Amino acid sequence: MRTLHCSLMIAAGLLLAAGPAAAEKKWQGQVLHAPVLGENFAGAKVLLGPITGRCSRDFGGLLRQDLLAHGVAVVSERELTAVAAEHHLEVTIPPSGGAAELARALGPADVISADITRCQALPREPMLGNGLPATHISRTEGHFLASLRVADLATGEELATLPLSADPAKQNEAQTGAPEYPAPPDLIDIATRQAIGQARRLYSQWKEDQELVFMDDKECNLRQSWDLLKAGDYSGLLRTARANAESCHGGPKTAAAAWYDLGIADMLLQNYDGALSAFDKSRKLHEIRETAGLVDWCRRNKALADALPRQVLAWARVEPKTNISTAEVQTGIIFDNDLVVRLVHGNVVDEDIVSMIRTQPNRFVLNPDELAKLHDAGVPEAIVKAMLARK
Image: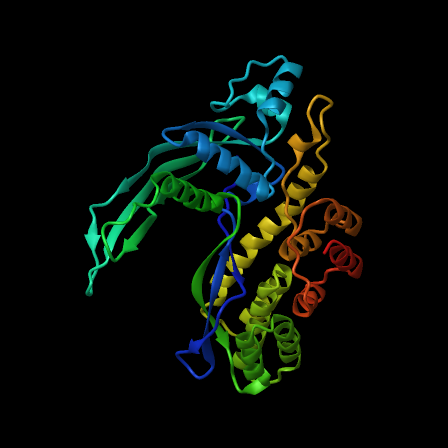
């Protein structure tokens, strides 16, 4: 059984509010959750299984596109048919569940299926808004309700289930007479795409707002670290926090706070080994109540980061079958700064990373601040140059 992981990491965000004590402040930012399936997709392929109910065709097509756009290796019907013929297997299309023989032929694979119980758009009764003259309002509401299921192809074991629910609405307004209603197909499309966004939690990182405690003691220059965090200067924060921790000669509580802040800085730059080391030194000096939860986040995200290089390398090295077009085996991996950092931290050799940067689409951000973050995260110069060459 491949283990299910739902992991978290702290990401860049908005700031601040006064903390409960002089030595603490609350940083209002975003918690970046790792995909619910985590390591389950590491090196695995995905088959789209039965998708039933209204809008199943549109939902299935959008789901396939979104999986590919987020670097998930989706097996096409043509590829599935070719593998079945090569190994003399009887395979239903779409796959209907556990199939040990097919799994042996394909390698690690998961089946994603969905049961759509509601997909519709309904006009509301005409409404009048406030004020004079009254505004006439025609409102259309969309509704999408489904359950998404992921199972291991070989065993049929359920890996995850995820409810999907979306209820968008649009309205037209007019001062004279009832305006035309927003088109129901438009609302169905919006609802379906919102459901895809929810499904993305299975295979892509997702964010939510959350507070994080940060230490800002006057001693050991911790107040400057807090100012850098508020300003969003995470590269400067890392350098200052490291210097503070290594030079702090205050009492155990202050020294622990300095190492704790360094752990936060490392987390912001996805250096989980560094964060774990800093938190460990902090806990040996003094136990800060938030540390245990942050250590858990780091460990789980490190496991995901370690799995990602295997996943990306497996997809990037896919060899086209002689009877399958190259376009059908494109993985859809889209490189960004974070992915490059995770590949570096996952000990993928520089040459492999450079090769993938040269051949895969990207969304690199390479302004001076982001280049400084890449440097602080330990990205080699040869890789940075390859990124710059693709912009």
